[in-house]
Length: 426
Image (cartoon, rainbow, N blue to C red; front, side, top):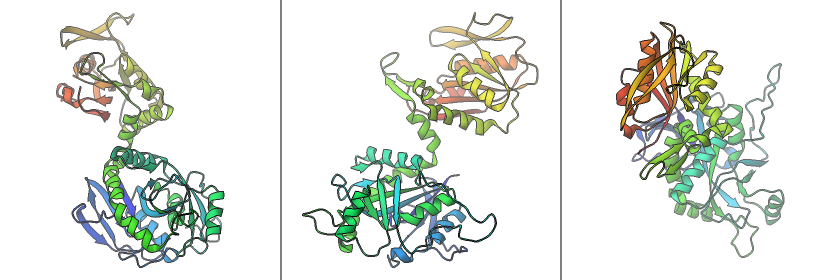
């Protein structure tokens, strides 16, 4: 099960939002974190919520025990960390109230413990790569949720992180603009880099509260200004997080679905055609699909994979190669040159059949069936019957897409069935 750590005053620790919660005091080798950590469930997903500045905003940025905060979330088993924060804008187009999802940082902090790797000795020195400090995967989901909610947002940005607690001078603000920074904050470093050292994907969701002090005609930032804008717009962050949390927990499914094109009214009116050619043509998407199948089946006893014509050949053969097993094609009539065994199945109007070479399957062999789509289930059922007719044992039937409204699962009840994604409707 996925567990998500949330840092900041997001308001998600509201008892009305979080289920089965408890407050936990976590001791780490770096001391206590900033607050008790609220652990519970949101939309069925395990979450751990930590108040970065303490419950009453009593800890200034320089005195936050960042190492204890990140280590506590690590000790609790968090797989991802989302950090909420207030930032100032260094760009005209990033306006107060906008949401920003930074992908890079510039570190201008001065007096913080920046690493877990600060011991002297052989094998103690570690240099962590930081070219991509924040999580592209989590950022994509957060950006998508913001777009669905209709919020004005900025998909990427460079955040310059200053020591605080004071705000910038005007000269500093102009310098940060010249350095290429888009927003300015006080807490993303070392939170982000510490999470990176521990291998925890981290992403900031930042709310713009002001224009720092560079913009003519705008009042220079004050703490009261920041808190007032946060109060007025905090519900945006809460809505994004509530929408994103289940998607992050099911990130692989969301990622695969995002790579599958939907074409309405094809091949006839009322049909939403799920086109996997876009998934096949996307390097990252196709690799992820094969990776999910591989992780599921790598420790199962499988002797051979049977792919159903035609797209089952694509996924099945690649997966068979990765698993180091053989591949058998299950074909439409008249396509195989040797002696075949066939199995009929019902269509909406009439019948069809599929075939396999009679000598392709040995009695007692364990087979995995792979196809692209489970709709009404007739073809997959016929494939299963065909394999069992030749003495094969079916480990599972795997699909890229399941259309549960078409009730194909009902025909496959006697076997284990798995799919990467599901789409509603026909």
